[in-house]
Image 1 (tube, rainbow, N blue to C red):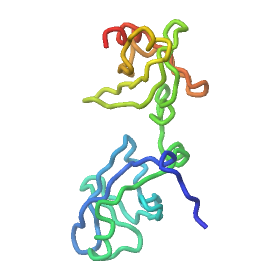
Image 2 (image 1 turned 90 degrees about the vertical axis):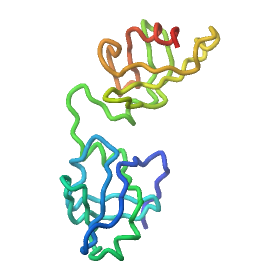
Image 3 (image 1 turned 45 degrees about the horizontal axis):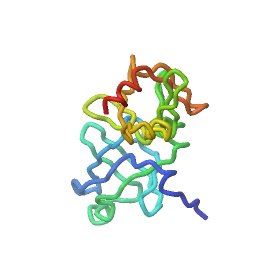
Image 4 (image 1 turned 30 degrees about the vertical axis):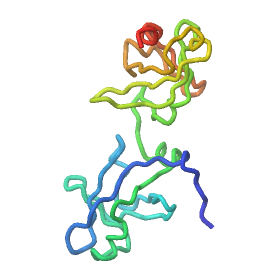
Amino acid sequence: MSKQFKDNELLHIATIGKTVGLKGDLKFHIHCDFPEQFKSGASFLLQNQEKIILESVNHERGLIRIAGVTNPEDAKKFTNAHLFTTHEDTKKSCHLEDGQFFWFDIIGCSVYENDLLLGVVEEVERIAISDYLNIVTSEDLLKKDLAKSFLIPYQKPFIVKTDIDKKIIVVSGGLDILEAS
């Protein structure tokens, strides 16, 4: 019996495009920062929770072949399918440098500046080449008629410390950004 996953446990990391050629190859559009996890033998889930295994991956051409699919007719059923993985599998297959964190670990962190709770990270947004924390403002600060949410660049000098285990991010200049929002 296969394990059923809730949508919030899965990460959408790629979308399969149209068929290419006569052997069942498919275009492949990556939606994550870790292309190295897409390799021969890697398994992923589709939106219907069906498991697929990649037979081959050609990153230069943006093509994949799914194990057991040998012709365009069989491959067409995967067109526009979304590939998902779990947080656990992502942590196993993707390498982070010191000081880097997965977005799913940052979401839900409380954001503090000088012991003042500014809010909680609702999501991480990439705008151009920079990542921003989208923060839902704390109730105490909402009572002061400040914005309901605001963005802080996830980079120095704004980010002082990130502690994933404690789910806390310490910032500098965040209150100024909130007050200007």
